[in-house]
Length: 295
Ligand SMILES: [Zn+2]
Image (spheres, rainbow, N blue to C red):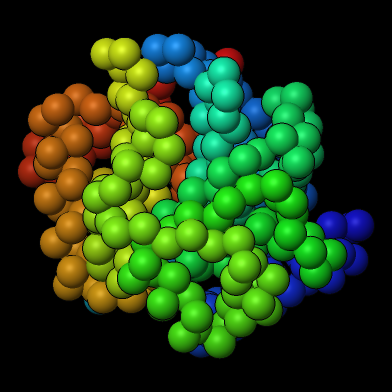
């Protein structure tokens, strides 16, 4: 497949493999571009598909303190296959009259083709906001060893940028983007109508982005959650991807409770594409209610 020939993509894939060292390798089915659009006040929002990861249900990624049989029960109850956990990798585009803002960039899969589907050229993007510096969120910043979005300022929290610079797994990406990164303090407004929100635990400087236009809101919660089934059924179960597991579990439970109470529209980059919907309370845990707005 041609996508594996690009050095930038190879680099991102390699980084991902290193990140998941000791874990079963993510299988990568064919990556199909997709773009789904909806209005949020005066803004045009586009969910962009990048890749699909399939992790075996082997107790190494989800439910690491629980048996694959227990995980399988939850998957079965949700009507999903019990031998594997599928995660989408998606990004979000926020278009206003004068700004084209991309939130996260995927691993370097189909994102560029998905952008083209949305009628946006890489050079049109003037700001890239990063939730955190894992390769499945910053891998798409670099293409063929160069900046994939040549006119964009790249923004992430100051804590996250320090973390990225100290992480040798993403050193090749950091080297290419360093001159373009403009860090901010978590909580800062980062673009017109877009404010960063600290959501610590998954990585040290992980943030979400609250997008507002008129009375409408959308919250990109980044990797606060991963699986639309397991992260909501068992928010207190450890996930291998989380850097600080107790902090991530605490933050996940707190954030989900608030999102369900406020009935806030969210975007979750690893939920089934397009990843837009609501969190609902379901007994002592939560469930996913996908929105039919994105078309
Ligand atoms: Zn991720």
